[in-house]
Image (cartoon, rainbow, N blue to C red; front, side):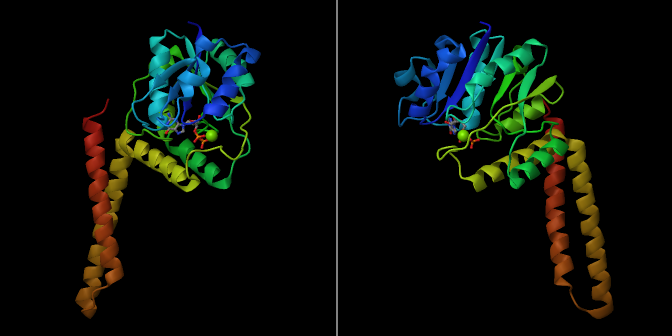
Amino acid sequence: MDYMVILPTLNERKALARCLTSSSRWGLLLERILAVDGSSTNDTAKEETGAFGVRHPRNMGYGAAVKTLMRAALAADAQYAVLLDADGQHDPTDIPKFLQALKSGADQTASRIQRRRLGYKALALLHRILIAKLSDPFNGYRAFSRKALETPEQDFDPSYGVETEINYQLRKTKTAEISTTVKYHEASSKANPLLQGLNLLWSIVWTALTKRPALTLTLGATSLATSITLFIYALTIFNATRYIRLTYTTLAILLEIVATLLIAIAITSATTRK
Ligand SMILES: Nc1nc2c(ncn2[C@@H]2O[C@H](COP(=O)(O)OP(=O)(O)O)[C@@H](O)[C@H]2O)c(=O)[nH]1
Ligand SMILES: [Mg+2]
């Protein structure tokens, strides 16, 4: 099969039905569309649409849905897969642009950043520094070549942080960024924005710590050195004045704990590297 359109869905009965009934308008055949329904509260994929449907026995999160869909596209022998949200935020008429970029040799096509909030931009900047150079790294409208679909899977984040994992895995592959529009409406997101932001932040930090052990070890060693310096300083003050400086000692203990954790993470990830 040439390509597949893959849609993670959770209770998107209406939006998905709209999306699928208009699919012929965007020149797509239903059998090229694969949806994962993570929900048990309605039968989004199968009942309403007649599109291919895969269903997790229970909802396992956005990330789990994306991974299942990528695997399913591979199993269906698709050369390319276009991933987009089923809640109507992404415009399916952009699909040909994604496919064109892949057919011109890109391994993945990502969306170029448009209007975004400051918090998102801060996360995107951190992601750019630590993970991969994408302008809109958490935009779920993207496409993969077969080679990109075959990239070994990671499995720590079953939720929105899956984007960080994928971005890290594909950081060295040929990437094209294209302009897409993201529509915002009442049911734009299943997630609480604060929790979603924390999830993304954690995915960046954890990916960087576990995938870049040299960096983690350096941070751990710096933390340890600072902790020892603070201890010595607090001890010098104590010897001279008989006062225990609580701020310095507490900080030193905290840094010591952080150092131990960082060094443990660095050693574990360096020795269990995939
Ligand atoms: N299977 C499954 N799909 C999900 C889950 N959370 C979100 N989705 C789907 O993934 C797409 C993007 O989710 P959404 O919450 O709108 O993400 P946002 O717009 O980036 O905040 C939508 O089509 C959702 O229906 C989930 O927990 N399980
Ligand atoms: Mg959405």
